[in-house]
Figure: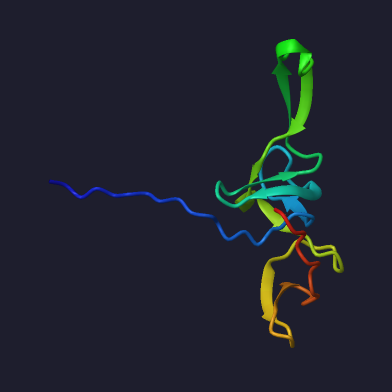
Length: 123
C-alpha cells in the first residue's frame, strides 16, 4: 500500500479586499490599475473593474428570460497577479497589519505606513 496524499483546499488569506485599488503585475494587462469588484478567497481569484474583459456568446433563454448576443464581462484574475496600490502615496506596495490602540487589526501601507481603507463588508 502506498501513501495517499489528500489535497484539502481551503480559503486563501487574501490581503486584497473589495474596493481596493490594485495594479496588475503580469499578463496582457500588466501595469494597469483598477478597483476590485469581488474577491473569491476559496479559489484565490478576484475580479477587477474594467480589466481582463472577455466576450461571452449567449443563447436565448427559455421564454425570453435572457436575450441572445455577445456580452463583455470581467473575468477573474489570480490574487497573486494583483498588487495593492496605496491611496495616499499612489505607489504599489505590500499590505501590512498593525494593532490599533483599541485592539483592532488595521491594514497599513508597507511604504508610507498610512492606514488603508477598511475593507467593504461582503466580499
